[in-house]
Image 1 (cartoon, helix red, strand yellow):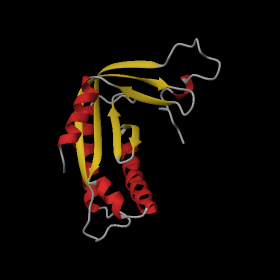
Image 2 (cartoon, rainbow, N blue to C red):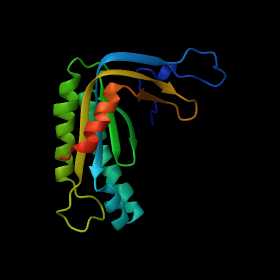
Image 3 (tube, rainbow, N blue to C red):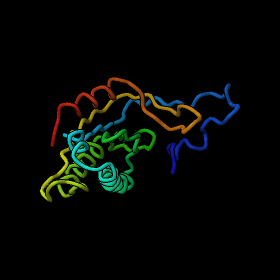
Image 4 (tube, one colour):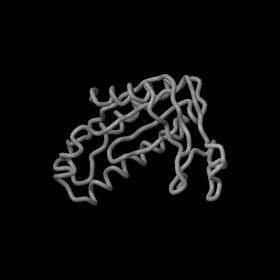
Length: 169
């Protein structure tokens, strides 16, 4: 499984390269999307652990397949949070459209059709909270143990997180 973006994976630091210049990018025009599942903690407390993992794995594999078609980069997932970027590291001049309209819409539609494992009824659906913002980001590969390409705190990042915390579809 690739832990680093293919665009930068050949440049990753190796053991003994303490003096190597860090892999860092600065991009002024990037779109980010943060999402999480409304009520996910409550869902987790009402089902078996294996159902939580199956539900997220199935949903995230659907998301991952869609990302490849859009040239949007999956930065990371933490629990039910899913974080992507467009135009860093994968170049995409139409990044705002790809992330906001295309990707955000696909996530919402996928959740509307998805019944998670262990749900108490077939009508139960996940609801996504999504925040999108465009602007400047800093990015790079961090660490040797499980290194990964990551975007760091900037106004763009903060506004995307802030929007996700307040919006539900």
